[in-house]
Length: 163
Image (cartoon, rainbow, N blue to C red; front, top):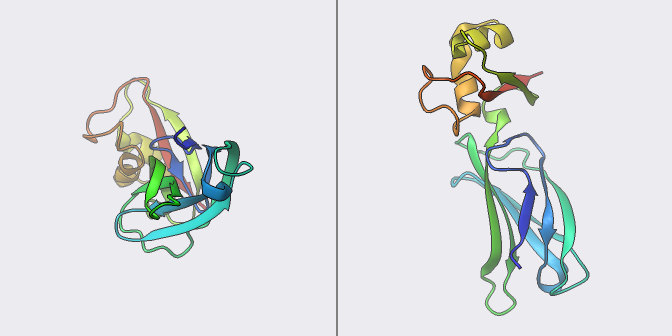
């Protein structure tokens, strides 16, 4: 069985630490995690289950601290190192959005359900006091917003919030 990441979900807005949870199994009960943007990465390992072939639940707080991420989009990976050749096997990968790259002192996000008459500028003004900050909301929702001039009634947008 492939390892499964249940948290975070694809395109979740995450902070530091990145909370990773799921079900897995690894050689000698060891799995590895990696959080990266393709330029920098943070890694670690943890134990799960009772040994090889046994699956168990896991929950890891992956501290990524001073990583020099250059992109908002990160990948969270959980994998087993092969006992045969050290290659990465049974890998699970989830793309996420890193809130601290979007707003200073990121603490979380609000959900805004788009209503008739809403624009990203209006939502930015209501949340940040500045309509020109609409790009922050677009960056936090790349899977929903490909054109900042096109949002749709009923969309649930994540609005990142800093301290």
